[in-house]
Image 1 (cartoon, rainbow, N blue to C red):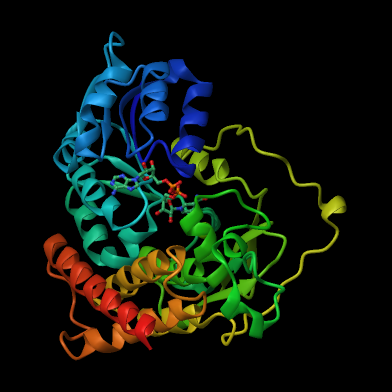
Image 2 (image 1 turned 180 degrees about the vertical axis):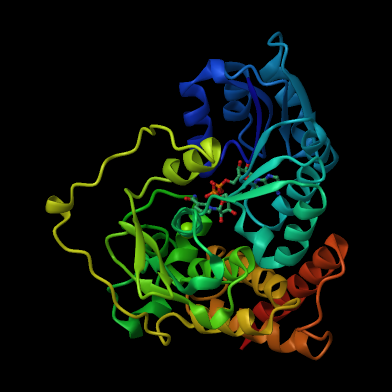
Length: 391
Ligand code: NAD
Ligand code: MG
């Protein structure tokens, strides 16, 4: 039996992982499931999957979790320390699907035990890519990408020589506002930006898809994970979301990965890797789809892509600043404090402001440095939002 833990089990990725695991209950021994405010979901899944422990990130919800688990034999725990302890529990495969920078510490902790970490939490690679890969190498741990584009690239590279890779192309749907006139974008509401044409995902990542901050994060993720230079990585708009990524080789071949827009594909690939097993995802009917379109993104419409390219070139601590400022800008947009197009202004101006305090290109010294930089950038981004509100 494989021992598995799911961090962020109650979220969109977490629930897709729970779905796959619960289809073969005899194959897995569930060690830990973690969540935050959704106690009923967390407890229900923990009981159904016979997890050893369920952890909520909210310390003040421990009693609720205990009550929900009463008599089930599943242990209850709460708070940051409990998340780290859960990452210390031996497991063969761990899903890292907490959203945001909160996912960093449990992932790092799990790697220290030489586990296989299925990484959905893209913030880990964007903020601390080199450290994360070093930590994995130091402890003989394996990181498998779960973002659909990166899983597609990873699959395209099986048996290939990375030095023969000329380019990596990741696709973007263009998000819910893709066909809006550019001058209307400033007025887009949270409901407008929170509707995705192809994928069912959490609210934050859906809005990040509309602004293409998500794609910007993924460009940086690609550079960090595959170690390919920034000028070999491109993003292209592909409204059908059928081709997830393409890898171009030195002989001119361009290998594409096609699949239904269903995260259970990337999750399942990471779960069964290095094998391929049958997965409950829809099969592509090419004749029905008939047309696959691709076009270059307009950087005026998507300033996040331009900023992300600068971050890829700069490296160092710019990824952590980009991510932190993006999270605060997104909070500001969701709270109605800033407009849709102001999110990129917050991120760009935070990078600028931080560059007068720290050297953006200098590498991170450790997880604490990452978290300090994250906090500093968040503070600057908050200040910037307050200034925008008053002008
Ligand atoms: P989500 O918001 O649906 O779920 C987030 C999970 O994290 C929940 O279980 C929640 O309880 C937990 N959580 C939230 N705040 C927390 C905190 N402070 N401490 C501990 N736990 C906390 O998010 P999601 O869409 O499932 O995305 C999860 C991660 O995977 C993100 O990094 C996202 O970028 C990435 N990702 C998601 C998708 C997708 O299709 N949803 C695709 C690729 C990558
Ligand atoms: Mg993705």
